[in-house]
Length: 112
Image 1: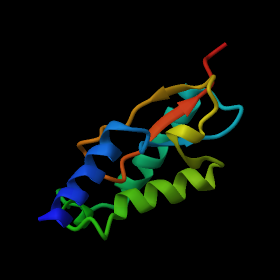
Image 2: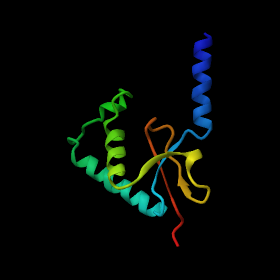
Image 3: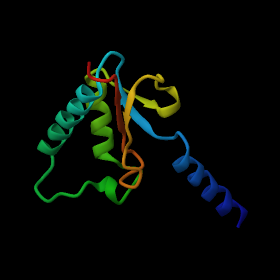
């Protein structure tokens, strides 16, 4: 029972604190980051069969979409950064914490 309580409390802390991760590249605006994310997702969809479910939806140890998105964004120069490692003066768009454990948010400078 104590193991369950420990795991449950760790999950709660992770959801309520800064465990969120963001795609971020220094010098890029939030809009540029979001646009790169849209382009990567469009590329991901090209490789999916119509009506095909991502196996990662049911098996969290295999997250093809998350792995593809991370690799694509990395190729474009973005890194995956935890919330507490982001610079203070960047705008954040939080990930949907209920969609997937690998869901990433977007971060970047304000449009000037």
